[in-house]
Length: 88
Image (tube, rainbow, N blue to C red):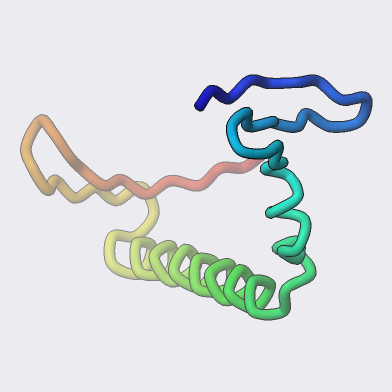
């Protein structure tokens, strides 16, 4: 059984030679697009809001704990945290 790629004018389809010709794109055409699925949109929105909240909380914590231009060494010569503002 061999699979070869056959170009089409609008999409690329794959034909399987054996008992009969099948198209891989036909199996995928029944699935809705991810952006149309309400669960996928809610999951993305939840992850985005959680990421934003974690980012803002970590900045608040860093400036509240270390202050402006504060520095905290976690592993000497390897890892340290430093606060600074980006005026741009």
